Length: 444
Image (tube, rainbow, N blue to C red; front, side, top):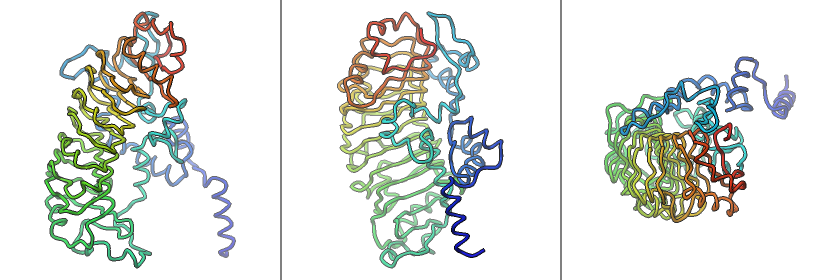
């Protein structure tokens, strides 16, 4: 077969959407999961092979255990066990309205209601793979293609001298053109700090530091990211995932105060302390993610002029300080879902930015105090999968009025709460509110 014929075949296959998956079982699984229904075969097969392992490793507190998290919380609120929550028949009118749900599919689409495409665009949860694919899963799929060592083929002359000597820098590796330093193979944090303090760097400005353990042993017996970890080397993004780190020193990221735009700390299940008070020095920070860890409380955050996205989901958070987010004037997305919040106190969500998307789903919330949402009202409020018996008119009317008057495609999601019908009768006076409000099904 000549080259021209082979090229024609490849172009034809590509134009027709690629090769089809022959295994019927895999197709059926894709059809019913609703997560990755139209992925190209190589990516889909990688996902199918890694699906069980992915959820086992990364869902430290799987949503299947969400009710038990509330039952075991310190205040011990009275909730139904899981077998009673997933009932096939809703209770009678005037009682609790709870519908059965698929935990896995709900987790995958928890922030992307099909009716609100604009929200998907703003939160960055939509791409060419699948609109309902969670960000964490999309990142994992992309990372399946990233194998160490980083390729240095076709390196242009202009970026060939941007990395430290490769032999001296092992097991860390550096891509001279993208300026990405990948230390995923490091198994000792003392060794990591030693490398950055002893190896000669031709420049102190790099784009990304990565330490992920998808393919390598996690850092063992190392609990602290120490001060001045990088020895003055600066980064735009720091990405640390799947380690046993328990605490991050106040000045661990020293040297990146003026350059750091994104901190991503995901699925570090032992991480209990993060130096929020030191973030005031990182004036360029736009995104802070601490997900799948063990944070228990959120203090008052200092002024961060550019912080737009704050992801604190899937921790053990039981307490958020009043006015915690009041100084975040550029905030757009605030996610505290999958935690253990029970009561939202006054001024907890004192917001200084307009059109903030607030996610509180999958908590243990059973009461919300007056003025819990103050100053600016959220443009999106997701309080689904909680234990609210009612929606107080004085609390939710200002939010609904803001949603209705805004050009933003906002809403309130109150699904999967044990709402008592007689406690939300006030909504009948304002039928337009129902256009912006998701309630448990069937309705009262």
